Structure formats: structure tokens, C-alpha cells
Length: 182
Image (cartoon, rainbow, N blue to C red; front, side):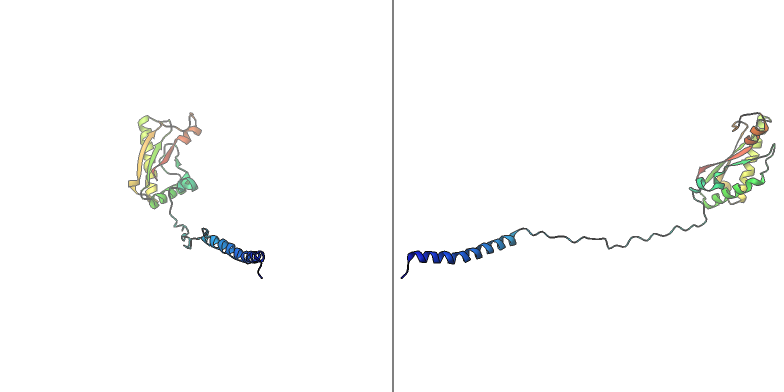
């Protein structure tokens, strides 16, 4: 005989495993529907770095050398009293600047000739010009071209040393090398 009460309990026992299976299926289904998060693999640039060619010293001067090479930094040529002859100690300076002009055809120089205060104004202007021309000739002999050089004479008008003695005069007997294009 069946007891109505026992039949209810049996169906409750049977429903528990079914409920568990349904709940588990629902959880799996919800998990499957959830938005998937994917981890992107790290992308690295597989392109090799550009090859750098080492700087080759071709022995030519560049504009930066005007401030770093000692013989190019020297830009004054001194003269003896009443002379336009270049002193032997100026040979290295003029050789460097001549090579710079040869290496840099677009470079331009103004040669500013000066004299001390002794002599007439006209004589000192002529002496400054002769000194500038002497330096121009030496630069051309060392590789510069006449088209790169401009000579200007200031005579006694722009002294670098004030004074009326040999110390001041020797500083004022000069040609200044001024780069107008590097």
C-alpha cells in the first residue's frame, strides 16, 4: 500500500539530484555566456635596429673644428715693426686655415690688417693692406682660393692694446682672420 506521505518524500528525494544538476548546468551556461577576457600576447618589434655607420675621419675640417682645433682657434698673425713679412711662427696657423679653406670651399674669410699708431694714417692703412695681402698669399699657398678671401685695412684705427710703448704696439701690428662663412 502506498502511503501518500511516503510518495511525497520520495519525489523530494528524487528532485534534489535533478535540482543540483540543473543548478550546475545553469552555472556552466552562465559562465559560458560571460564575456571572455583574452590576454593579448606582448607584441615586440621584430625589425632589427638600423645599422649605424661609424663616423670615418676623412681628415677634412668641418665648421665645428673652428672652435676645437687649436691651430684653427688662433686667428691673429703678428708682424714686426714696419714690416709685412709673415713671421715663421705663423706658418702652422696659416697652414691650418689654408687646409680649412681647401676642405670647405664655401668658407669665406675677411683678413683685417692693422698697424700701430706710429706713422701717418695713409701709411698705416697701406701697411695694414700689405699685411692682409701677405696673409692672403700664404693662405692661398696652403690651399685656399682668392675667391674665399677678402682683405680690409683698418690701419691704426682699431687698436687692441692702448698704450704708447713697444708692448702695446706689438699687439696692434696684426692681421685678424675673421670667418664670414664657415
